[in-house]
Length: 115
Length: 113
Picture 1 (cartoon, rainbow over the protein chains, first blue to last red):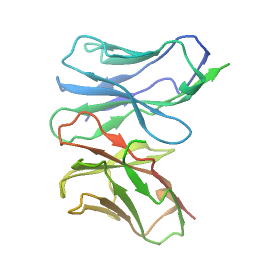
Picture 2: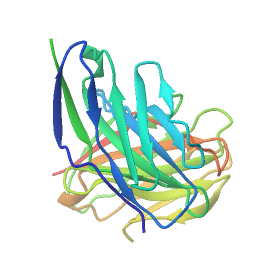
Picture 3: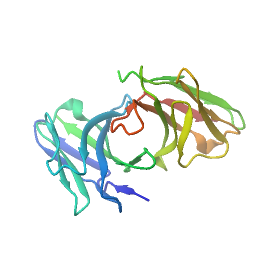
Picture 4: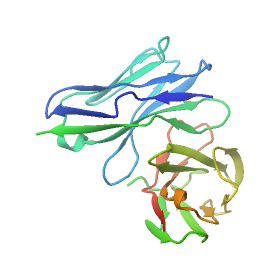
């Protein structure tokens, strides 16, 4: 079974600075998807960024980018120019390409933005 | 707004009772997933339906059941409720089984007292 680990329960960063959230996963599959979801106080789960394992190029969405290291099974999220609205719980998630189409989530990292 | 609608938003009920949580997926989405978010277990996959058929089961208790109706909305039924069932229950939907992206509803906060 696949597992996802987020080793940082909490992180904080100054507004306008850059922060990196860590995520490692364990799988025997060669093809899969990885995601970062954001959960603000409103509780809504919002997709931040998506990475296909077969793509070597790291995904980027505006101020959000990932560092995908397939061999190391590492998938970190970098947030540049942090904004107050980025404060939330961030969840790393894994999804198989075949079989059960479920998301396997990490335990989450609570990100605080200091003004 | 993700387009996925969950009702009710909040639910308070007593132990031993039965409740039904409802999910309306985005227009055109055939897949519905249910997840439970609790403090001790984190986010856990419960069950997946595609076009009315059950496709996968996760850590869903026997006291819980779900179904997806012809109009594609889904219901999660929780019975013989225990204090430990208190959690946030999410529904997510996607167009096809193999879609990479699932869109989440705002969740139903269930409190069992």
